[in-house]
Length: 78
Image (cartoon, rainbow, N blue to C red; front, side):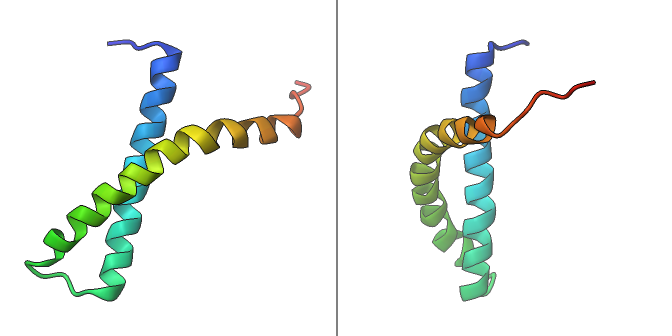
């Protein structure tokens, strides 16, 4: 299955945001709470809240950061 570049960019932002949020919220909670039966009950709402913040942020920041980097990028001469 192939998808368009536009949809691929959307999928990229969503998946990176979800992955990053999962790792960060899990890691932060691990530093404050031991892993037991209650751990995933505590983690789930933090993960969902993080996704609600990180996904829209990814759509706002990624294009702006790309524009900034592109201003300082030169084409390879090879």
